[in-house]
Image (cartoon, rainbow, N blue to C red):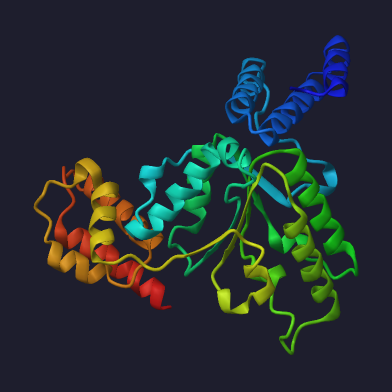
Length: 320
């Protein structure tokens, strides 16, 4: 249950009509309960806070201190697990992460912890960010994307100080935290072009990740895993590798996106040939472009020639 100090602080904030302070303290209580293995109670408290904020016209997203403005972008995870079109083996590993999170109380009773530090690697547009959105949705947590380019500065010590702020937030506000373009701060310390300041940043990052014992999910995403320092891989509970979709995944993805605009008469041989080598994001954009053309041409279903054309356009863009 909540500590005595938390209860007293809640009462003080309520009596002083300090709503934001009350909400913050309530979320801290939720985090405390989650750490004790009371996952359902923690979720219920967060839901009560969210509903109250909505009813009062408040913003359910976090309000960050001014010095962190622009460093963290928050959104509600609204992508269900069914939105992921990935190989069964990879999707199964994501489902295992979700299952462990939901059963973390049982694991904790045996001295074990759930997977909560995950590294995602692979080409752009292959589902890494979508995976983070799905995990946020499944955990009923906010997704906070760390703008790594805003973390890195030219002033000595400032980047490490900002990293400390981020990990303080991770500790105090349970959520799914996505470090996109992770290689920008996790680069190999042995590279010739590395500078002393970035080595210090990486050492700080390694320490923060290793010491973190919060209830948050930490996700690193990179398009260039070869650039990452090898010591980073040991700090993650799981490393998931993404690739462009195979023929089965491409067909399933196209059908999912087209929905009612697919009447079962597409020339799949041509479509699958044109989509070969494209990422999930590129195929998704091509399908949406084809749907727009279909609507503007007053047609009811996407034609093979239309989708082939939009896929070709995406492939040309991809090559450039």
